[in-house]
Length: 294
Image 1 (cartoon, rainbow, N blue to C red):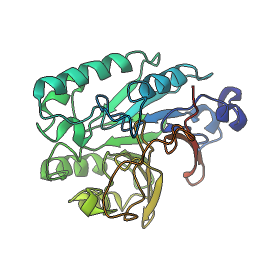
Image 2 (image 1 turned 90 degrees about the vertical axis):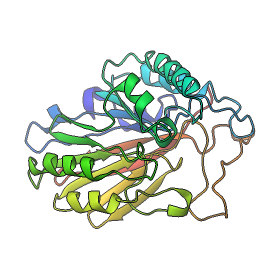
Image 3 (image 1 turned 180 degrees about the vertical axis):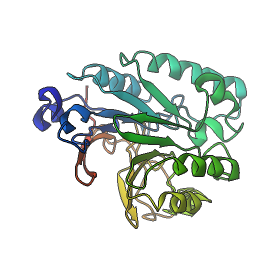
């Protein structure tokens, strides 16, 4: 592990939603120099009110941010993978919530913070307000030999990526080697997990088809408020837990309703994860851990 951060030390860190530790991703003898970790936070739903499912709705995000700031080694970057705020029909209230969320996020000491929209942030106005605060809804970046792709499958109220963005993705991938290490961030799952619960992307199969020729692709997403793992051929998909409330397992009950808060088990269903990547070939070993009471 990098700079002496071993697994036991990592487990002692304060609880936060969706922490991702990536290690050993280098290909060469200098692999240790390429080792890094990042933090993924998802589904904070700032503005949500519902003491039955989370009486600490305005406190969970600050606790997570404090935990990230307390990490003994600073992450290379932090990424929020959507539903930063809770939905509202009022454009003024939407901007108020985005403003408040941004102020909370500014408490992060890490200078490299990236944001993605969720349908709660962007579907009612096709991302108009979200773009005012955070810019593009889809983009790429490269970090220490890994190509990261952030897709927008939420701005379209029909839950589509859309032809324009898929053409953009095709052009981007055309510049990548078939052995490139690619990590994709989305909010909704790209595959049909539970379409009747809105746990799918209507044209997600087209994105997966574009990714399929690449040998080392991993997808991290949010939206479903729980740990879930799935594979489409060699492409692995891993969902992050939420920082607001958990949701039931897909199809486990007739309706998709938040799991109620249990005072005997506070923060149950909320948590963070460790992702260890090993070479060769790149393989991610993921371990989930619960949020700890402050």
